[in-house]
Each structure stands twice: as structure tokens, then as C-alpha cells.
Amino acid sequence: MSKKYVIANFKMNKLDSEIVDYVNSLKPLVKDATSEVILSVPFVSIKTAVESAQNSNILIAGQTLNENDFGAYTGEVNAEMLCSVGASAVLVGHSERRSHFKETDKEVNKKIMKSLRSGLVSILCIGETLFDKKNNLTQNVLQKQITECLNSIYANELSHIVIAYEPVWAIGTGITASCDEIEKAITTIRTMLVNLYDEKIAQAVNIVYGGSINEKNIKEIAKIKGIDGVLVGGASLDPTSFSKIVMEFNTKEKKTKKAK
Ligand code: 13P
Image 1: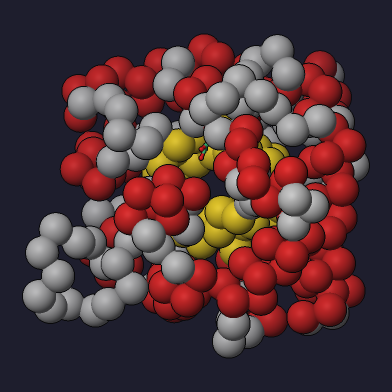
Image 2: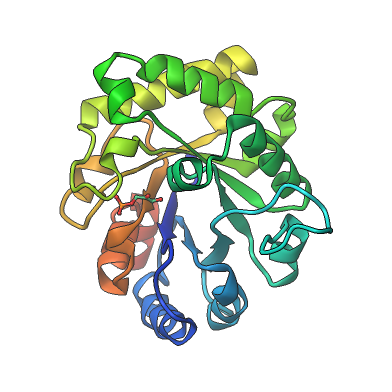
């Protein structure tokens, strides 16, 4: 059974001290989680979050990175810097980066390469806009994003990539994609990976869903065939809500073990 990922994206929320309180509250609530629990926090709080999460099963991630090594890129942070403060993963190509900061698939591709080759897990975000959806372009958009973002990524690197299917129209809107839509998108993405790589490699890639997840709708979403977890924005800001989402992905094996 593949590992599940439950990832929080704090976006530009929470002060450093609030992140310490958050991690301290979350730790006991998710201590029995069988999934990878990852918090993507603002750059300035990565080190504090890593320290607060010591001796727990919580990992810390960045929300983006610059694809260059060191140099004159004022305000930017690269993969080595993320690693040096203890980050384990990084979000790449989030739709807010694509829309506000005009990140292209080619840039996202370079960011993935840099993050993977520095030892970070890359959480690649893809998904169609409402315009794409209304014009039946979802398949084409996903195909372009997958092909360009994974260009020159070796098969053996794919196990360090999590693909987050986040339809832009579902992010922060309170409108979740239907279970059918999510299942179809996951199947489509996996088929694309089979075509680019092969069946075995494609099956090993973790594909998660993001977009208006909350502690109520997670029960149905967690049951979707082929889903390997979720990426949560708004509902991740409260540790209790987020822990309920995390525990929805706990495998039965662990629960049975605990009951003994
Ligand atoms: P919401 O859960 O607030 O819709 O945000 C989703 C998201 O963008 C996670 O990266």
C-alpha cells in the first residue's frame, strides 16, 4: 500500500510564534498518523517550525523556491537554503505562484530539478482554471503541465515527487471538485505518467487532491479510488481541523494494531 500524504499550505498566514503554538498543538493530535504529515510554512518560519516539530512525525516544507544556485536574485530562496534550515519538501508551481508571479511550466520544471537534486520532495501543483473547465480543456491543460513540468526528470526521481491536482476554481472558493471529477483527474494524470514513463513507475507516484478540503468533505474524498492524500489550505490553519483531515487517511492496519 502506498504512503499517503496530508499536506498543509499555510500560504501567507501565521506569525513565527503562532507556528510554534500550532506545531505544539498538532503534535499529539497526529502522533499516530500513518501518513506523511507535512506543513508548508512561510520561509521565515521554516527553522522555527522544524525545531518545534523535532521528535514528532511532522515534516516541514517551503512554499516555493528559486531555481538558481546562489547569486543576485534579491528576495529569493534556493533549494540548498531550504535544506540548510531543515525543510524536507517544497511546493512547486502552486496556482497562486503561477497567477500572481507568472511562473511558467518551464520554470516549474527547473524548480523541480533543483529541489529533487538537493534532496527535497517536490510537491508539484497542477490543475485547470474555470475557463479551461468550461471549455473542456482540462485534459489538454493537465497534459501540458505534466509533460513540461516533468521534462528531463528521470524515472528514479519520480518517487520523490508528489503530484497535487488542484483545480484553480476549487481553491479557496468553498467549491470542491466532485468525487467523480477528482477520480477522473487522478486516472488521467496516472495514464499520462504511464505514457511518459511506464506502468510500474506511474503507480508509484503519489497523487493528491487540493481545493476547499475541510473536515466534513474529507470523509468522502478520502475514499476516492487512487487518491494518495490531500493538500489543504484554509482548513489547515486550525490544528484540530487539520488533524481530523490527517486521521481520515489512517490505514486500518495501524488502527487494528492500536486496538490490541
Ligand atoms: P483551500 O484549501 O483554502 O481551498 O486551498 C487549497 C490550496 O491552495 C492548497 O495549496
